[in-house]
Length: 253
Image 1: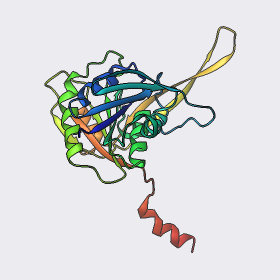
Image 2: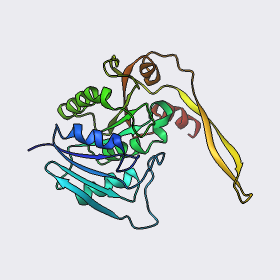
Image 3: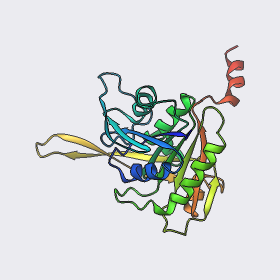
Image 4: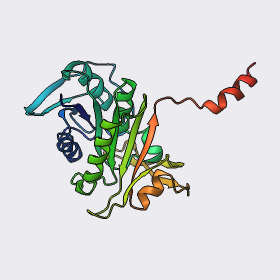
């Protein structure tokens, strides 16, 4: 039996990255896509809980079923696994995101929120991102690496609760140097809300910011991407900082 692969994203059902990933995944199994019906970037692990979710199948052909819903990326995974997949998926893929999800960005990412939800459901998953925000971004240079990572993950299931955060540098075909296994770089966003006035004289605020990375380590994802490598960071949904447990126990004894 062919593997069943569920695919979602946060850029929406019409995003070029989603369509590219779907075509690559068809090389490995039967594909079901359940993606938001609009852009849902930056929603992290949010879910819809205050209204019903509506979903529909929009196309079907041999080996590929396309569906969309008006929920979040996490909703897409939860809903598809329960109601749209004929059996439990063997792998969940999220992306390919238009833009980076390296370092601290993983906290805000709807792409990675969906991938983390999959492993919370005990399904192996991978989140893919390309460092190019353009709707017409060229995903072709990264396809050989995406293909390799999917094949390896199907053959070598990651530990329970672990998903792979994959980022691809924005380079021409043939110039990506390879794959590096990394940790998240120690970086942050210096955010700022720019105050503006609308035509009716009412104030509103537009989020701006600057990404700051002072992490020089050569095993970080930011270093790998800056030097022409695809970065893979294994992440998990257990936020516990274990080294602090014993220290806190002593404080509260």
